[in-house]
Image (cartoon, rainbow, N blue to C red; front, top):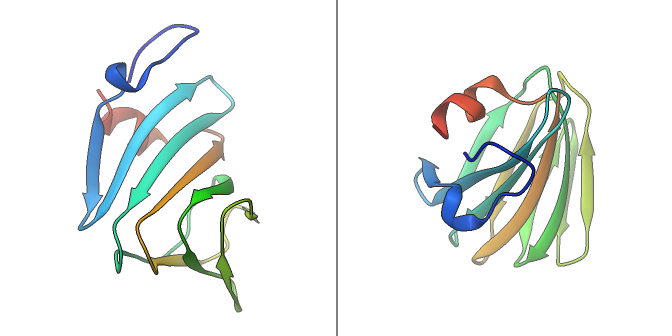
Length: 114
């Protein structure tokens, strides 16, 4: 993860955090964090929760999201909002790119990116 006001993909290393799930930790402040996630077809983010609010936007692909007890297939242009503490999961139905923001920033993503 780069320090400063501007971050390029070359300055933000891609981390394979789960099989087929690749993350770049991009712009980060004390209050917010922006991450890019590339999910290969059939990659799964298992059910989990965290204290951070999470808001995401699908750039391309198709993601099956489960948030709480609701399931929805998200396509390009769709977004989602996950309050902190709510259990959620995802499965890439095709190769997909999503952008997620976290508030407050996730300390584990900040540390892994260095």
